[in-house]
Image (cartoon, rainbow, N blue to C red; front, side, top):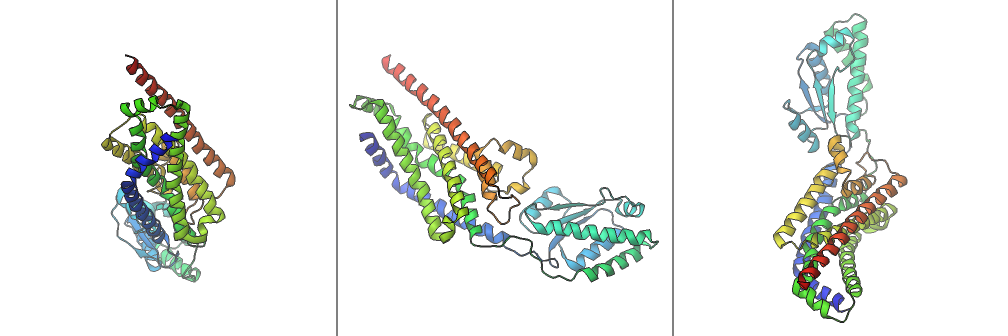
Length: 391
């Protein structure tokens, strides 16, 4: 019990800095959840999409296709640069980018359908797929007129006239119904980053104090068994983590209302709790090496930011490369994000309870693995301490 009280006495001394971190991270998390949702909260309109066209053919056929799309959509000038295109799609400057390669007109006249055009789009948006269908329909119609003996100019004119009869709709929505639950989705989306930073920076220093040689010697002199001391310290860590996690859940309930404890909300809460276990194990492991404050901050930022960018917390998994996603599978945050993706109305991740429990199980395996490594490291630390004391 004395160890338990001492734990919270030390925690109380660190309370001001902990509250500061909590406040800063909470504001960041809520702001990011609302800003991210707002950036996605737009209805798809078939007549007013911002698109980019890279015309490398510069022919009558490519000009006709460009003119056709320009009548329906707004063409945004873009450089023929892969990085510029990806940035424009990510920041939603454009919804779709069409690349017309050199030889487009020749291939069209020859009836070659392979690699006639290339397109880039966000995987989490239906508008890009609709525009693919729109362009494909235009090219099919144009081929029909070319096969009937029309010239490129006549075929383009007849195709445009035919398309005008089809383009009647001015606003089509392909997204799921929007609700305040989308804000909740983003709230949970950023939680791993906050938990890793907060626990590493605030909990690890408390554990490191208990590992100081003079503190350990005093505790060894106390009439309490090592098992009882270990149990008391474990209870202190558990309550500390639950308090931090519970704080975010309560704030979520205040900000997002009943959505927090809806079916989807409860599944997200369980997901965050399982990730909390992994974060606790990671914090325990880090504390065994007794790093100083600067090293702790570095570890927290490297692990937190690394997982956030690799696993899809800051950058949607839908636009990460397949090779990067293959690597991120070996990190627990990847599976955490895969679960949260199932609850976002802008994600292409289908909902599956089987996959949900699979992802939960994988995160638990990460927790068990890191906790096992911590136990081994902790045992070696104590063995080394006892050896140095005996000498």
